[in-house]
Length: 508
Ligand code: AHR
Image 1: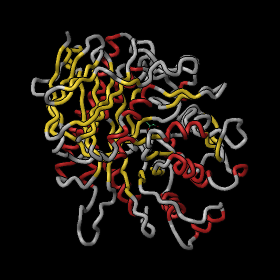
Image 2 (image 1 turned 60 degrees about the horizontal axis):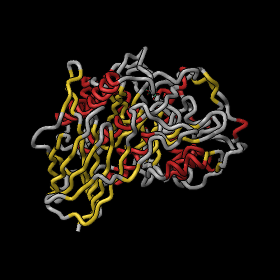
Image 3 (image 1 turned 135 degrees about the horizontal axis):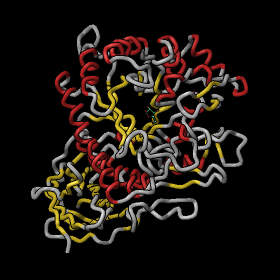
Image 4 (image 1 turned 30 degrees about the vertical axis):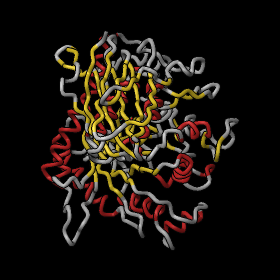
């Protein structure tokens, strides 16, 4: 018999809404994310729409992707958008100095990205160039995309075949400006963010949500500088601040940056070390939120975690600049843990973007460079199983007896993680058992509602190293979970070792 963990959820006490944008994505001109991932060109034998791979689009549509960040990452701060419009054979090429030193032909540009967003049903999140661009260049891009009527940029857009403006809300003012985006000091960048924010105009009723390039990991001083320099949070002269949100980047890297560890070859010690690093996201979101609270107790300014996920050594034999890695059950558990934490921070955290959607870092989809075969990763399945949390009201989960934990070196890892939400008369509970060896039962005490029926699914495998390949695409895939039983006060859910389980309960 295994441990039993009681968890109380008051299903009639709704907390802050979990924005669907916490399930956002990121696509950079990096390795095979865009070229060979999302985009194969019109001449490809693979089914495509204007060069965009349709099997990739179909698979991602099942995730209800709310937004897609593009074109970087570090690439954003050397991207010049005007090189990516007009006839493809006339677009100048450039060297992608950050990622593999390869030539970028600019065949995937603004129009192709907006078409991709339309196919996915996702909102665009454009990351503008502060590092090597100009204020005018960024301001023109906003005008090109969003202005109606007649203007120089509107005429250019129309000449390139698009009459109507697009709607673009999310706008990044540079990326990692403390590093690859210009190596600026916090104060210098904060002043630049005010300047760029000023000239990124709202055209007509298109209202930009400007996101300043925020801190890395636990650089709370960076966040504080951006908050101090933000400008008015509501005066008559300028009702809006210069930027409406700050970003944050945090990657799960249990090794060193020189040797991050392998994606598929690891032992139980490496696994627990990974989970300790993943769990740090709670400490980091709490810390940055606390700093923001000092300047903005009304929580008007959003926190945007626009890069997160695991970062391993690249797969043997692949280009080190392409960041191609496999994805195992361990990655799926990292994702599930992050989402539980995100749900608890729904009052300040307005968006999160996993890095990156296809073929790069903690991807949803891996495509074979030779035959084009497409594989859904274990992480994909967590996004799919959790999609019911999008725009649902968060529900607090209390574990009165304390959450089981393990000592991992000097750290303590809580091995059971639970989060819940309510939408349209349904309660969705996500649960992870992070213990590598021991099963556990979670006894859900669901107060304030009666369960009419239940659907449960489980994602697990015999080994933590299990992953999907073109030959074994379903090695890690969700299955119906039968080990859920009704109790006098709710449901008892069995969680095998290293498993992720969702329970969807329709209320009477
Ligand atoms: O996602 C890969 C890279 O990680 C991004 O380009 C950069 O912003 C971060 O350092």
